[in-house]
Image (cartoon, rainbow, N blue to C red; front, side, top):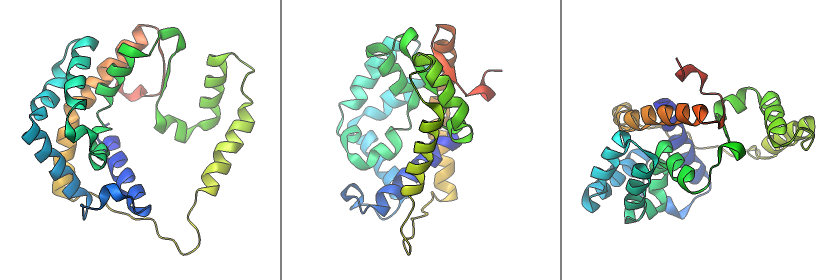
Length: 203
């Protein structure tokens, strides 16, 4: 899932670039954002906490590290969320400590939703009480929203990507965090949370 983390970072960078977001005003490309983030993490000392995250053995331990990391100026700088938002295990543990109850939680693989919206929406409908969602209407509205969000004639969506060297570096950055994510998702599933997708990682 390192590839998904990288794709998400590139997608968010391009989205903000398309919107001329002020958070990118000091950055010429996505490589420079990651370099600045890692430099900030080193200068503020949170790089050590980030490195410890994948070896944290419990939700409270992950949450303690999350509190230290999220209170730093690096975490609060908008452009760096291109990469900090990809620390899914850290965020999942935070939500687990404060918000998530097994009987009220469904975790959905967004790539599964992209491939099979209708069946995912049916599963969501069943989870929240059966007939409370008109699945076909929701499916149509999702498609309608995506159609309306397409670019106007003449607009070109940015296609910025990480350089090959930087892509390898970012994938290595995410790799231990995403291994921890699969472990947490397996734990969620064992403890009664409904987890849709991520099936390639359960073997």
